[in-house]
Length: 180
Ligand code: PRP
Image (cartoon, rainbow, N blue to C red; front, side, top):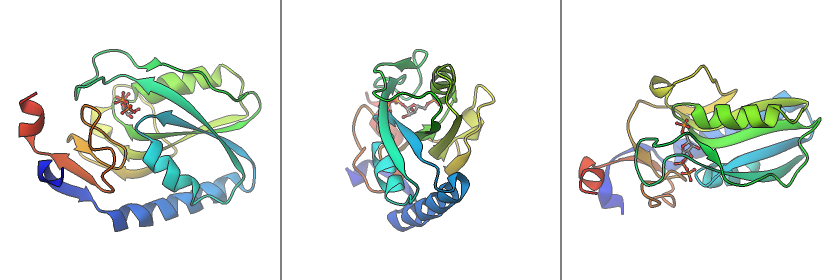
């Protein structure tokens, strides 16, 4: 699988260190207030698993399944929320967690849906941000890494459902997606 990569952008040590910093920043911000952390499946599963183990504040976890990209590298449709939350959002401190902020349409959609349920607050944390791709003015409160507009996989991010288990982030050789 590693042979399919053109380059490793973020290695395991760099990712670990940045997530420790994010954990401290989020802990400091919420100051022992309990949060409801809503993670956006599937891509955020790896980041979320590491992030929550670097948080000391009390938290509960809920998951939303959202999909927009299907098996391609470009969004084909507007993001769709494919599942419902098990938790009550009203009056809770919400932290939305996703693997990547690309066009921003997914986060904007989820943010709007959650806001409509009258939480105490809604904040967001993304592992990667591609600001050049943004189609709206959504800004995450915490960003792991800002990256250029290149197709990346690993650490939860997939191409056609594959490569999510790579413990680092890399760019795919164009031949991998040009042939399919
Ligand atoms: C990816 C990613 C984000 C979203 C970001 O999800 O996980 O949720 O796209 O893109 P946007 O900012 O342009 O909306 P995808 O639909 O590929 O599903 P996945 O999480 O299952 O990989």
